[in-house]
Length: 209
Image 1 (cartoon, helix red, strand yellow):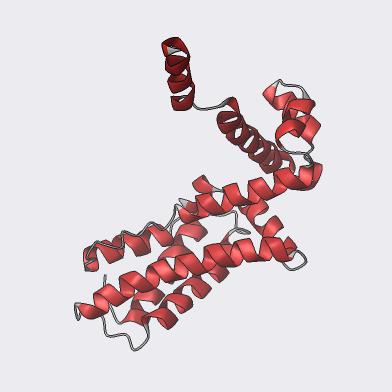
Image 2 (cartoon, one colour):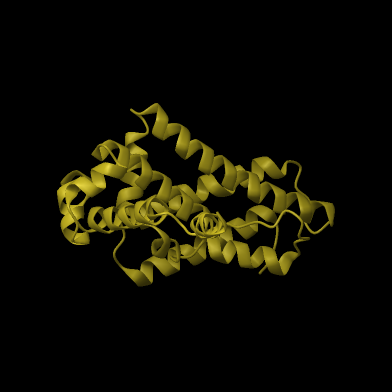
């Protein structure tokens, strides 16, 4: 009986194969879709890259549609990594400048692929489930920035009549900027535009760098 209890405890503390295998499949699917495009990606191609039988993927994701939903969650979770906010922290102007620098940088591209992000974004106009996922993520980003702007307001470092509205304006500006810059191939031009856009945000907030 004691031996059974010890084995049970070990198994409870060990990650199941399911817990580790699903993220591996999603990551492989992302890499294949990033290279070939979502439309040209199949479960068979992902299985080939992973050197496993397609039936193993189907065991975890019954259809390509199921795998697509998991991939969208993966992309949006990485999107959230851009903007982490500590709700307990008191933000000053130095920290705020760091946030703006992070938002207006091409480091975003290291987190997720623009092509896939906009593929699924376009599909959100036809798929309510995907639309809800995008709205949830985008609203959470705006909410996080609102918290920071409100903290700066409370410290009299900013004088914003409506921090939530300002946060919305910044992200609307950011969304448009990144859609345009995702089409630009000249890296020098991208950096120049990002710098200009960032300065516009400081003008909006009546701040100087």
